[in-house]
Length: 550
Ligand SMILES: Nc1ncnc2c1ncn2[C@@H]1O[C@H](COP(=O)(O)OP(=O)(O)OP(=O)(O)O)[C@@H](O)[C@H]1O
Ligand SMILES: [Mg+2]
Ligand SMILES: [Zn+2]
Image (tube, rainbow, N blue to C red; front, side):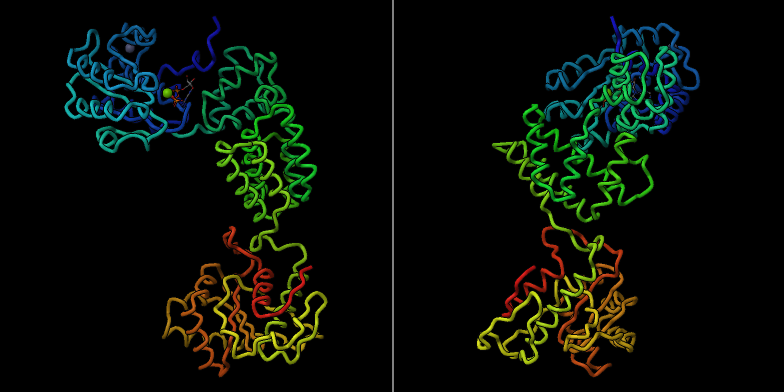
């Protein structure tokens, strides 16, 4: 009968366990020094060696000729343990025996001395699965364990283990296995098994198994079922990731805002019985890759994809800003959450796809391509609003903005409430020869203003240390070094104290304070984050300016 590779190659001793030296070395030392604990808790992600190490430890503490704390693998105890015939080493899979009765039985059995071994060892695997009552029963024995009993609990879900249990155990955290360690182990096992495994195929397997050695060996098993010679192509076929161009097609369509094509692709996949939740997860994975391309450029080894897919991803990434990618991720994460509850999964997913394709640029990450156009629109709207405030005398229609005609509808300056500092604020408008507004100029005595502010509001003043200011009319434009400083400006108290300081130092009563974080400093995207242009349009509308949007 064929034994799966991962079973066949389960390490028999600490030396064969890779990537967990902090665990294996410590355990071997404890055994060598005879200082083992009563109870251990092995935790960490799946397939990283918890069960394996539990078995090795159980052998090591009972081995008749341990060497440096490692089991000899030759004595009668080691051999019986490896054959699984040793009654003193009891493995309980809590995934199937979750009841309090099992633990009670264990308690009763635990009082008897071991048959052959020095210690009776109870390995309770997947211990997070046992019931609350069973945990309580377990605690009772763990509180006063007989001298001859040891417990090794293993779990992937430490947060489900009661603190009372955790505190009675010596805890070891198993790490995800490093890719290079997986590659080495795969190459070693392949050579022993006479499997023709190419190095880049091993690397791909390691990449796809996300730090789990069991997954890596299972995937290798699947590959050899496909073909005797294992190369990257075999791996991608076996892993079912070959021919997933549709993912990149959908993302490409999303980047181009091409909803019809994206929906057509989804429709095709749906007809071919593709599971929508799975598709959603796959897209999330690729969006994560896009996010990494943007955040850590030039590190293709961080991406979980095939080499030729990375090229395609690079092209898609070039069309998107980081903000847009994060927004798209958010849309799909929400969709993934909603899908299990959705009446029509297809509709739910299609909605997300339409959103992906119609989602607007998120400001604050990468500037949109045409910054100057945006700035021109901001300047225009600023001028409109400021004019309106000063009585509307010099208002002139701009290309896309018309003022509401009947003058009576426009509130007079005294009726316009003093605006609170803006939640999202604009960059200083560039000077335009045809605007009646003064061009913004550098505020020369800005340091003095900040200095003055220090006595009244030191914390806020500190956040303005590296800021710069421009002024135009009654508007002060401040460029702060980070979004935190910008957020401080949103507080009306802070804005007021800044206005006072400016009045005292510069003799000017500023009515509006607009702030922006220096470029390169992202502000959190989110449903509430709006572009400066949206903000201005809204303000213009509320002030009675009729705005026709482009
Ligand atoms: N650190 C490791 N070194 C070498 N092989 C490993 C390691 N971890 C896991 N393996 C391989 O994966 C198989 C499964 O490992 P094991 O059962 O110990 O994982 P686990 O951490 O208990 O996982 P789970 O949480 O899923 O139970 C082993 O039989 C072995 O082939
Ligand atoms: Mg296990
Ligand atoms: Zn032995």
